[in-house]
Length: 106
Image 1 (cartoon, rainbow, N blue to C red):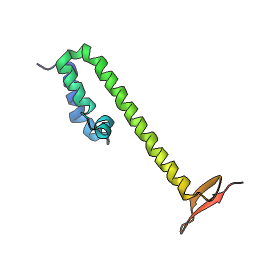
Image 2: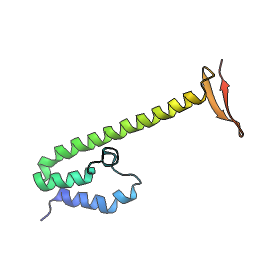
Image 3: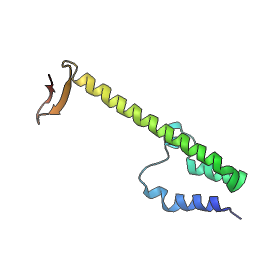
Image 4: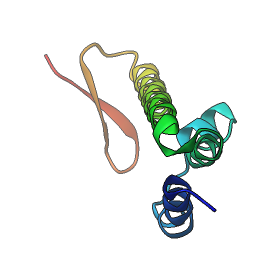
């Protein structure tokens, strides 16, 4: 017989996960099992109470991986913007409709 946590995780996977619009960052970025898969394995091996701490740590780690990925994406955008407007200090890029121009701020 399945425990309560396993049933909750399976319900999440079946009815919520596929509709939320994104996948587990831990699985996508690190190539390991998803947090829900990890949670199922923990609850089957350790039960509800003992696995709660492990699942909580994993969710925190997944959040950290996602945040680090976001920072790296923003850094890549910032580097691209700096390279696009390298000729002008204090530059604010804008689109003139035809050309990419740069408006300098004194």
